[in-house]
Image (cartoon, rainbow, N blue to C red; front, side, top):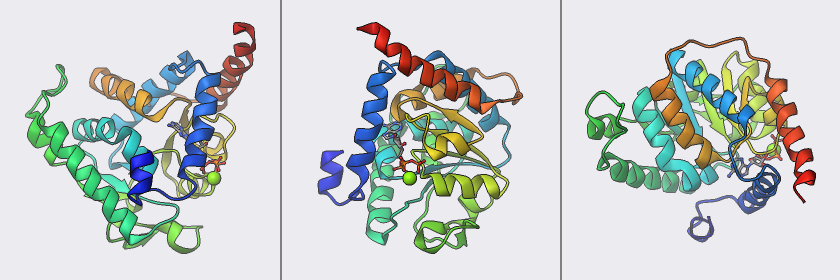
Length: 242
Ligand code: ATP
Ligand code: MG
């Protein structure tokens, strides 16, 4: 994160958001809690079932979990879109360059044992988009509304880690299923998403990959508040650990 910040790839507020996440992770015991595992399984089912899913990433997500999410995108055959709240052309192209390097590295790994197909070409076919926005998220003003039509614009489901609450709300209002990964169970994104995974982005993306490969079911009825309440109770139970 520090290196990426020094290279100008992150917004000034990125470290503040990161610290906020670390504080919640500490209180959650730095593990994937049971309710987050359930949310990850539901996210896997919805991602597999979606017609045109997209993974929307910001700077923190690319730095912390870019490689994990490229593996997820390779298995799903979906694009990854760089979509920034504080959009500048330099940061978008810098993050896309970083994703291209990550994609190259991941393509040379042996794929997951239960993946059917040719891993290298599945990985290299993951579209990395967001450079030329030609669409706007309805209900948002200015550069924070920009996105691409082929990605977020036409998607029926968006997996969007570490999203801002206004944008999460706008995506939900435009009729999309929105899966958020956010360590803060009280953020507006967590409260507004269709499915919230209260977990660290790189840890949960790794679990998500395994669940997508194993998943043999469709989406279920989902009451998102139940998981958020459980995360809060884990946090309050952390008092009992001392
Ligand atoms: P909101 O706008 O949804 O109310 P916010 O304004 O507090 O939230 P943002 O900066 O918009 O926060 O979004 C960043 C979110 O990402 C925060 O809720 C933070 O807790 C969370 N976060 C930070 N680092 C991580 C991480 N590594 N893994 C998961 N979540 C993280
Ligand atoms: Mg916010």
